[in-house]
Image (tube, rainbow, N blue to C red; front, side, top):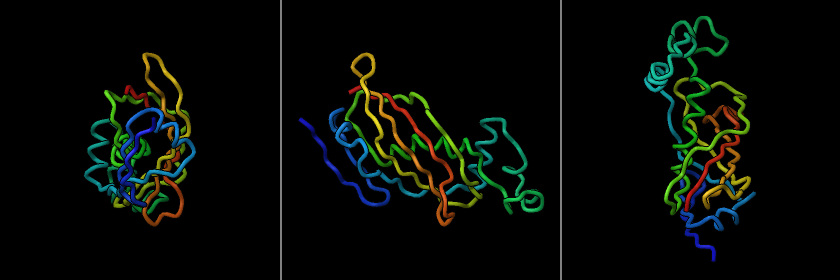
Amino acid sequence: MTTERSTATPEGGLVEIADASSLRARVGGEAFVSAWVEIDQARVNRFADATDDHQWVHVDPDRARRDSPFGGAIAHGFLTLSLIPSLLGQTVRMEQRMVVNYGLNRVRFPAPVPVGTRLRASFVVADVADAPDGAVNVTWDVTVEGDGLGKPVCIAQFVTRHYF
């Protein structure tokens, strides 16, 4: 039996999924869309400190305005990527014992993220496959967009392992 209660809205809604069969029923279906999150300079600086990536195009707004082709500081691509689990958590809640990040199949950063941009992500269940110990691996097609940027800033296939 598939049990699912949906409170999804076009932007920033939450879908509750009770079991693996509910996930399987969602393969190729409607996207789950997160709320917007702003990428400010303080967040970029914290990420630079956490990863020891202090490249000037990220952490020196004045130089980035002068010397980069982007017109100002931009977020690290991996900062954008690192937000995917949190943005997924805003869109889908599962009645499970545990979930772990299992990996990424493909990642691209088609456009930079100027500091000050708002981001949101859409998630489509691309595949649900049996995994060891009764778990399932879910492959999510993820598109992260920047408000007003006109093209995605990150496209990824994200794989999570769920233990129901």
